[in-house]
Length: 424
Image 1 (spheres, rainbow, N blue to C red):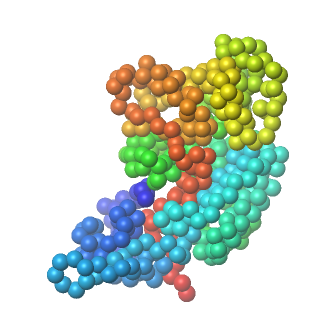
Image 2: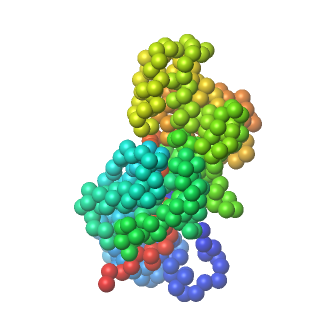
Image 3: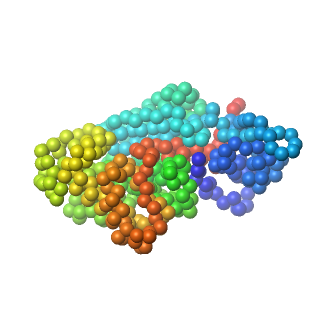
């Protein structure tokens, strides 16, 4: 499992406690990335001396983060027991709240999913207060589903679409939710009453990027761009192995680049945003619209049915139409791919990523949009047919932001193991 490195400067002046905390994190990252090893091997791999490693391992065992595994025999001398990440104690919850659904996973410290749930819910109708209540209910249900106890949950991260003030734990603005200044973290703290759990909130695209970095096919790519397609469109950017948040923490709102039809109103109140051309509502409108269009669709007046139900139901209907070779649907998806490629090429030329990963409904529609995206990218990205940037479609599905939320919690604990208290 890949982890996002800690942001602290290990070379800065530090007292003895800080040095020990950094070394504990170093040991945990080594075990998470490289798997079980003996104390001697850990000393070699981390550059720490054997006595230090032995002392650190004892503390990590006391905190319930690692355990001793099998006896390992190698070479001359007394055999040693391997040290491995403890999967039996700590639990991390990742949740995603979006316009018409709520999803969540609960994992162990290695990222293995122990339970998952997804609910179709009209968040716009519920509003922030009732929605946070449903989030708390889902978290509690996941704990029960995997047979854990609330006191085992060390972290809970919530993914939301919009501008997030991470330090304050606040959704500053969610244009498609129509929410402003929602105090997410303190509301959930009050709802759950889990005093030992660290609760945080982040943007859905950032967390989707974390999921891809941790466990996707391009895990560990140090320059990765994740584009998530939902009702809106957002980007999670990993540059030199770190999430890029910008000066105010709001980086990645690429869905509001002026690439769409300048007459179409976006949920943000502006016109011509990219997400009005390639977001899920735009795809539905293009497939369900009246008139024959270039693709000569059926014109059967069935558009209203596409506009009902949650995103998953509408997406399934679009795929069924595409599989039936409906002309309007295929033309609409090809145009979606073309416009997706236009925006992605701008970002590729700007950021020069190793890989661009398309998630959300972009991944679900890969079969029908990939060729158009690829053609547009090759004609616009510097380097043309030999462009270095790879194009991939996420294999993590719509669960990516929730998985990334769980991994964000795991990273927090791995980078600073002292956050997990020794049982008293």
